[in-house]
Figure (tube, rainbow, N blue to C red):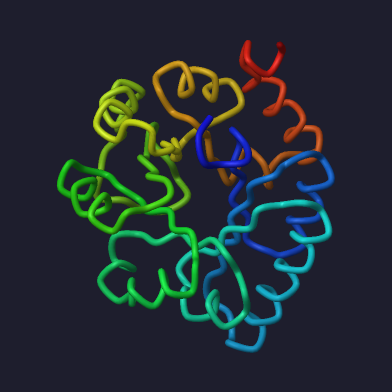
Length: 206
């Protein structure tokens, strides 16, 4: 796979998850923080940064690009709305890597214009995590997106589960991402190990 350190990509809502999932072998984790006071937010980001360093995790911060620059976070993820507000030249000057969300051809075109380090497509299946104006994309759209973006890493997200992850990779995704199927599980560390096993390829097996 090109450009990302792992085929699995948990999305978490608290910094402590970085240690929990990192200890189980997750190497790429997004910290998505919502609805908290600024001081709490900064504390979570700083904690996530230190835990990522301690456990060899590539930490991706969702949305807060200004804080990422100030706090030395080296990877951010922006949605299409975030792109409206982001200072992309400042992000690039700071050396941040960038992932973008896409849900349509128009959004893909716009996303590619900002020269991202990966493109995410979703929701692949219906998801209850948040209301979205887009219907399920389906794995066939992953194949189309991969053809359009070439060597750029493609992340599948939205309704992805352990059972569905291999079909995303087979359709063309380079990496599979989820929230609930990691942090809502009875044993999140065992779930990470199961995802790692399920997404191994012949190349990994030698």
